[in-house]
Amino acid sequence: MVRRKLSFTFSLFYCIGFLIKSSLIAATFSFSFTHFLGFYVDPNHTLSRSISFSSLYKYPLHHLSILLYSQLQNPRSIQGSNDLCCEIMALVLHAGKTNKNAFKTLITAEYTGIKVELVENFEMGVSNKSPEFLKMNPIGKVPVLETSDGPIFESNAIARYVASLKPDSSLFGSSQIEQGCVEQWIDFASLEIDANLLVWLRPRMGFGAHLRPVEEAAITALKRALGALNTHLASNTFLVGNAVTLADIVMTCNLYLGFTRLMTKNFTAEFPHVERYFWTMVNQPNVAKIVGEVKQTESVPPVPAAKKSPQPKEAAKSKPKVEPKKEVKKELPKAEAEASEEVEDAPKPKAKNPLDSLPPSKMVLDEWKRLYSNTKSNFREVAIKGFWDMYDPEGYSLWFCDYKYNDENTVSFVTMNKVGGFLQRMDLARKYAFGKMLVIGSAAPYKVKGLWLFRGQEIPQFIMDECYDMELYEWTKVDISDAAQKERVSQMIEDQEPFEGEALLDAKCFK
Image 1 (cartoon, helix red, strand yellow):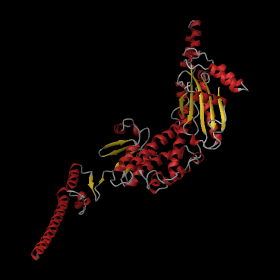
Image 2 (image 1 turned 90 degrees about the vertical axis):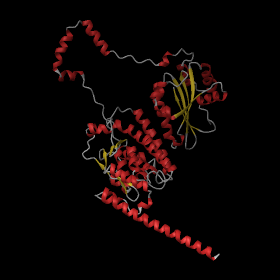
Image 3 (image 1 turned 120 degrees about the vertical axis):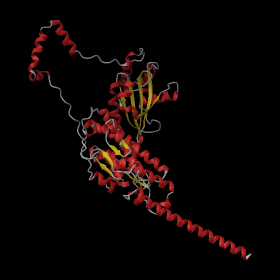
Image 4 (image 1 turned 30 degrees about the vertical axis):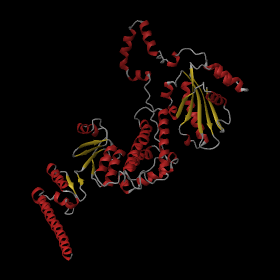
C-alpha cells in the first residue's frame, strides 16, 4: 500500500517536472524566434519590437507566421503590437476642412487612435475633378479615403472602416443587438435627418430651384424625424448603450449642418432632448477637437432672388448690331411676318387633364356644391338627401382620410392651421373634388379626419404628385354598400357633433 502511494507521488512530480521543462524549452524557442526576426528578417527591428515576449504565448504560432508573411509581402504594413492591431500607413482623407461628412471620419479616428491625415490644399470643384481623384471616385464626390489597399468613398462607409481598424473598439456597441441598433441609427441619421436638411438647404444656397411645397414637405418630414429622436433621447444619453458609438458620431455630424445653417433656437426648442444631446456631443473632447466651437444659426438663409431676364427694349439698346437682322425681316412678305409673330406670342396649349376624358357623369359637381352652400336648415333632409340622389358611383368615388401623426397635434390652432394649409394646396383639384376635414377632440392630441369626393374611381394621380400633404394621410375608399360607412359619410358632410363620441373642435370644407 505504501509502495503504491510512493509510486503515485513520484509519477506526479515527474509530470510536473516535464511541464516545467517543456515551458522552459518553449520560452527558449520564443526568445530565439524573436531574435531571428530581429537579426535576419527585420534588420530595422520594426517587427520584432512590435511582438512582445508574452504575445508569443498569447497567440497560436500560425498567427505569428501571418505576421512574418505580411512583413515580407508588404514592408509598409506592419501587423503586430500586443493586441495584433493594424499599424497601417497613414490614411489620407480627401475633403475640405469644414466638410461635415469628413468630420465623421476624423472624429472616429480620434476615438480609435487611428492616424488619418487630411489632404492639404483641397479645393472643392477643382481637386475633386482631377483625373487622380476621379480614379478613386468616378462621380467626383467627397470625401474619399486613400488606403494602401485602395480607395473608399461614401462618408458612412469610410467611418465604419476606420472604426473597424481597432479590434476592441466600442464604437459598434458591446453586443450583437447593440451593433444592429448602431446601424439602425446611422441609417436614420442619413435618410430621415440629413436627406431632409439637404432638400431644405440646397435651393436656399442656389443649388436648384426653390419650390415652396417641396421645402414644406421636407420640413414636415424633418420635424417628424426630430420628434422620434427626441422621444428616444428623453430616456437615453446616447443613441445606443451608455457610451458614444459610431451612430452618435454620424448623427451629430448630420445635426451639425442643421444647427449651424438652418435650425434656429425657435425651431429646435420643440425638441429639448435633441438640443441637450447635440450640445453634449459637440462638447465631447474628441468631437470638439475636430468641429471646434459651434454656434447655432440665428436665421434661415433667404431664398436667392430669381434672375430677371433683360427686357427686349434694353436688349435692343445694348445690341445695336441686331439692326441688320430687322432689315432682313422687313423684306419678308407682310403676311408671313405677322404669322411668325403670332406663333411666338400665342400661349402654349395646356395639357389636357386625363379626368376630362372620362365618360360624362350624371353628377354635376357644381350643382352639389351650390346645394351644400345654400342649405341653411334641415340639412339632413335637404343637403344630405340631395347628395345621395346626385351621387354617381361610376363617375365619382368617396374616400376617408386619417392623419398619420395625430400624436403631433398638441396645439389646437397649429393643428387647424395645418388643415387649412392642406386645403389651400388642394386648390389645383377644385374642379374635380369636394372635401370635408374635421379636427376632433376636446384636449390634445387632436385627431384629424377627412372625407373626399374625387372624379373617377381612384385618387387622381396629379393630386398625389403635386400635393405633398396627401402622403401624410391614410386613404380608405368608401364602400357605400356598407350602411355604416354610408352613414359616416353623411355625418361628416353634416359636421355632426359629437362625432364618433368626441367633441368637434373645427370643421373645414373644400368646395
